[in-house]
Amino acid sequence: MPFAQIYLLEGRTEDQKRAVIEKVTAALVEALDAPQANVRVWIHDMPKENWGIAGKSAKDLGR
Image (cartoon, rainbow, N blue to C red; front, side, top):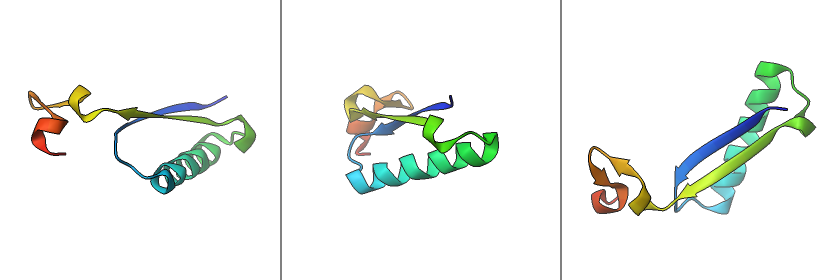
């Protein structure tokens, strides 16, 4: 059973997350010849203050 974990900064819309789930699922089905029903995708919404970029939080960088 393929299981993908995706880490994203918070703020994406439900439609954007839905598109990520659909496209990651399709890619795993194609690449691994896995049954679509067996693919799992977990999106982690990361608070911007918990994500560091070049020594600063993404929140402080305005991302």
